[in-house]
Length: 107
Image (cartoon, rainbow, N blue to C red; front, side, top):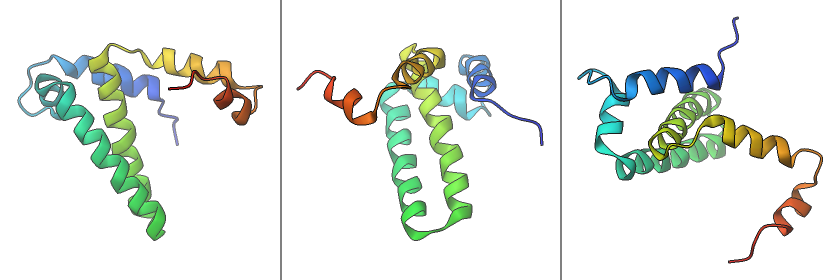
């Protein structure tokens, strides 16, 4: 199976974002703005959690795909490149999660 990457998905989302294609869910989400995209991201997060807790592996795979897609849409609307998130994750490697969390500003 060929590897499909998040970078490729981000590129597809960027290409479809302002396409004006009436059949493109991505174009519709971008047109509706951050509130709708963030709402969809939250819904998919909840559905992913439910699938995980109930042990429904098929649903977990499907809902995880929806979650990742909507997360990338939210990043795209916000103008945050995936590379920024990946750089943040890369910077956290080599540190314990406990130490990293303790280093965050309180508030």
